[in-house]
Length: 408
Image 1 (cartoon, rainbow, N blue to C red):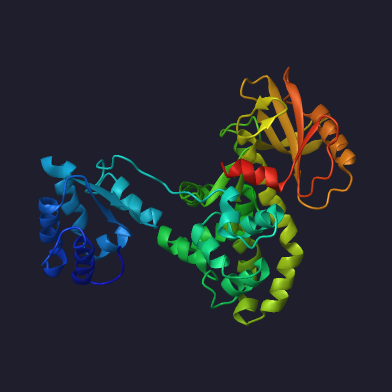
Image 2 (image 1 turned 135 degrees about the vertical axis):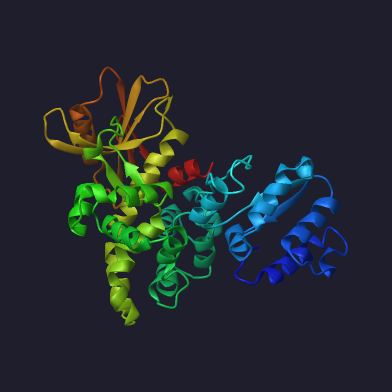
């Protein structure tokens, strides 16, 4: 595993690990990477796997390493070893492997971009969660990064974990987003500003540009970089195309980053002054709308995994625009059936829904006013935190059903 040590120490560490498979390998001092790799390629059994984790750190200490690996991968004996290169910095891995000028460009047979774990697995990592609704709330804070789940598992409640890990200036995750951006961006200042504005509710390019007092055209590259890194997601209403830029909305993709930029970043001065209690109290009061936004996303994500009203469904999207009566309207969940003969329309509500018939009536009214129905049949569904009954003709799903769907 790569780290920030000098090359001689990194070679010694790798040689020790290889010595577990090749006797005596770790008892030799190798003058350079060339000598170590030569011996490994000559003595390793066929189909041995060489895994170099945090490869960017290794390459930073030994700039010749990518070229040395290239030479061996291009040789006829390359098939003797399988090589896996891994790294947590997308920018640096891209530069080392995917850049056309890089020695290793074109040598990869498979490129795996490891994404977050699905929400359906969080209860296995956090067994203290009392129910599925608590699991949704925890996922809305920690997102799908396994390391965050590991850290949170050491604390009895979400509130205690947040205070110790995130709000406390000495907490492990207090400055995590800025550290991630420093790894992945050469100049993170503008990206931090864009993320901060999106986190505080600016979702349109024109809004972001106005708040930064810059022309919208100047934000194209930094926004595209955030999109490429998967830190920001572009949302379009159901049925719209990428050419419909005026209707594009930008959201922070990861729930933890979204939480941090919404609740932590604006309060950094108070937190540095150890004013944790009032900040924690404000988070407790404002957490439900944040969880509600994540609940909507999980509802949409569950749709392709569900069999609703006798049909399978394509990926869902949100819709906003003018209804048939020309009044503005939003629908949380819109999806087309696999055979394209039906549309699923739904609302996702986080909070106590005591009047389900009223909610069902509102959804039916929206369905009648939806302008994109065409000749397709309509199916209606409600995603509720606490489903208590089943209105006629409307599917009702709760946290248990959503987590089961997303854990498959």
